[in-house]
Image (cartoon, rainbow, N blue to C red; front, side, top):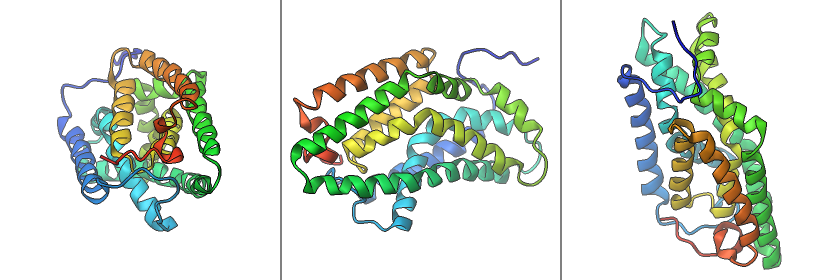
Amino acid sequence: MVRVTGRPVTLRRGASPAGLLLLAAAAAWVWVVTRWGGMEAMPGTMGLSLPAFLAVWTLMMAAMMLPATAPVGALYARTITLHRTPRMVVFTVGYLLVWAAAGLPVYGLAVGLGRVEYLPASAGTAVAATLFAVNGVYQLTPLKDRCLARCRSPIALMLRYASYAGPSRDLRAGAHHGAFCLGCCWSLMVLLAAFGVMNLWAMVALTAVITTEKLAPAGHLVARVVGIASIALAVAVFWFPALAPGLTGGGMAGM
């Protein structure tokens, strides 16, 4: 019998599938650091076309999201009896496709925010405050709680995925779980617009927040603390514009 609790999933077996996801995340981090490590925080799309932006965005999401997804991937792998490795690759592809699709509105947002640099400095500060406030409020909503609960204790999702039939099962399962992760973390990703899309220190900090929310015993409380802190930043940025270097020209290096 499987008992559903409010605690995050921890597994003693299935380390190989989790290891594959962590290896993919590590490879993505290596690429991001070596390719963009010295970039200054800047608004907009960094001069990238839509296809290039989506490729970079997807690699960023792989680096940031896969570490917290590894335990769920290991749990899903236990439902697979044959061809485990290639099917886990398909599951991961389905998961990342959701985040790749999320890159489309992010690109539109980045295009719009790229024009902030031509406006008075106060405009960038106001936009940054709005982004901090949006994240802070969302972190405290029931929808955030619901999505985070599914990511922290996904046993019910595993039972649902067991009912999927056909060759698209792994792709559908990965995409479905990716949708819950998107619902859980989209507002945190929006903060990259304030910090600078390729600000690696911000990426590291947000990855730590996401992983702690999903895997730590008190992760749901961490989400609320982050929400309150984000609301505080929405106020503080008017006095300290450098808190949002991606929109206020704080000049914070990528790493």
